[in-house]
Length: 386
Image (cartoon, rainbow, N blue to C red; front, side, top):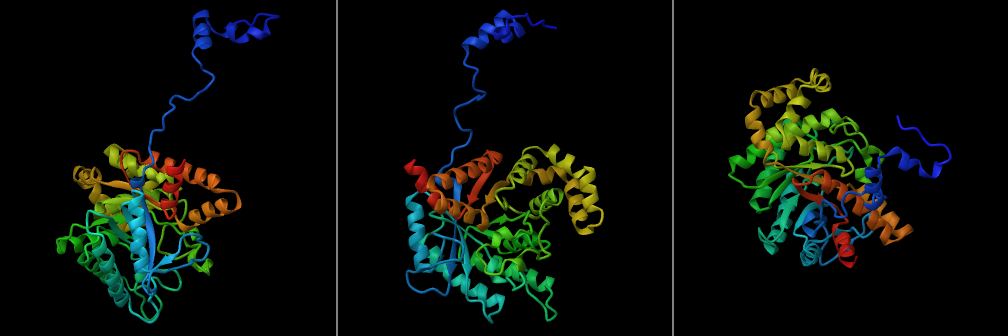
């Protein structure tokens, strides 16, 4: 044990270390703990996919304000086309189209057919290979109580009819040549139905899945009546980490191509998905854990799928090796960024978003698909000016 010499308190560090260690410490700039002055990830225009809400009721080159969503409006088809041209000029070549409007008394199938027409118009302007188009079918079967699917006369979701609709979505979107379909993470077997339908029609469309979709009201800040959207009974309860990871693995088994973590703040899920697809031992350890057993013991359907994974682990891991990881910034995150921009300034808002997207990209490093963010174009413009 080193004895501190009395009367030499100004030389305590010298007394704690050997002369050789002390000389090294004195001459090697150790006042900073930073190991590298270079960021591990680079944020580029193609890091992002830009969401666009296309209102099929709007005519002409117009945009309509959205509640609580400054600078992110509903756009007409013509305005959407113009906006995509601007995205291209800044190097963003991936978009998420969210067709909205025209519900009323129309059936979900008619809404789907109406969406198909506007998607065809946009695809014609931007052929495959020019812009990657992903379509979010959220508005096709959104109900007033926040649930998604075809309802029966008793106000309950008709599972078989909803499955039929999921299949028809895959067929109709495929017919206009989109690149990817977004599955919503609400209906049991949603990815499997979509994958089987795509295989039946020999479609090369990829599946992006909201595999861990949770019951969060932060995703619906642009709606007038928030409380009714906080509990649909279809999505995973917030904080249920084990269940979220189980659904990720099930979606991979069913045939997804890209697991999209929503919201982006769930960095632990981005990293966990990356770890699954990096090393199959991580899958085995998770599936054999006591926590997983407790979650599965009363869920026979999920247990059956997990048993299928374990019975053909090598085959399953071959699927895993092809998977990419994406993330999605919900509207509540966008709202906070814009509020900060308005109440403070652009630099603070940029710093907030920059931190978030770098952490997400770092968590998925080497396996990142896209970060889906309404602020994508704004961020890239700001980045270019920095």
